Image: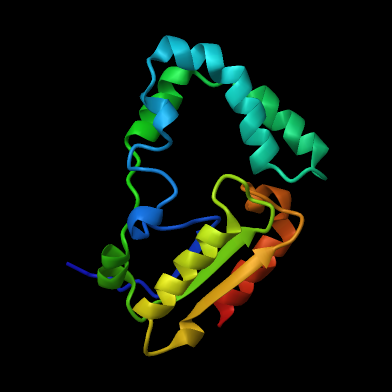
Length: 166
């Protein structure tokens, strides 16, 4: 069987489990442990909060589209999605991504996974790639939040293309 080695990895607005300072437990935000009928009652408020923290304020059209589409989501599917999430640990990174080129793009205004959490992830990645810190690049994206690839698609594409060409 042909086994391919990972040559590069791109993170968009990401973080990893950093001991007790992790952003949320496995299974997503604790609110998704609430009964489904309560989540349905809270959906509109949760959507407004997500858009407020997750979409940079200058992107009014995108903010409205997110409000409309998020409120149309079936909360059963949302709950099921978040309950199955699991954060990767620093040790899992060490095993999988040692000496691999890594690019992390993060929206400066991200209120869901803050830029500080993204920077902490990159610091961990630099420890993993201790032999070559040039393999790890962190790029804060201005005028972007949690939806960095939608808010600044041209800039994200430019960084990804540059990364792939290196």
